[in-house]
Image (cartoon, rainbow, N blue to C red; front, side, top):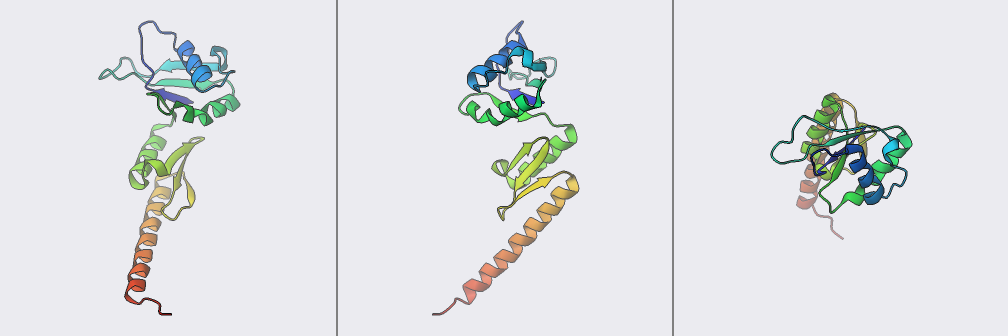
Length: 159
């Protein structure tokens, strides 16, 4: 399932129709009609702080869901964003990873959390223990590389 954030709300709106219009016109996915959606509704009972409630979208076809997901960059410059719907434990893990490694270094794919480490490798994190191990190894890597830089500055190579 995917979440659409920032879609303005109106009274008596037809949410599947609104979503279908965004998917076909903004994301340019022509087969994302109302009929291609299994379920589509706003989360929560009322909007808070004049902020529109996110929309949950469940697709009939996983291939269509993936095409929509990979077209999400078409939303750049608009007030609308898209994210994967994650269960609470995964969402908490994802937020912790983003806090540790930065927003631009963490993303989700198929419900899995992906991280680019300070060393540049891409890692999949499934559990809190995985994240703790990754944080620890990143700290150890940073400490060992800074020790090397300090030594190399004290003893420069001569020609």
